[in-house]
Image (cartoon, rainbow, N blue to C red):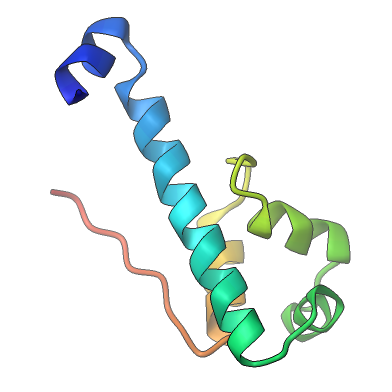
Length: 84
């Protein structure tokens, strides 16, 4: 499948989308486990509810790594990035 996507020139976009979907899902699960609302997450991150919506939207790829790290820290997690 990767070869086909690479041939079409869309492999990187698909990989980035998949990563964002996983991160958004993991953050939502951590929030659910801790009974943490979006409003409260925004408050603890010192940001707006709109920014939290962007972080949790699996289709919005326009979120900085720093923002993801802040969100992860609030729910007791951390973001790991690796080049493989």
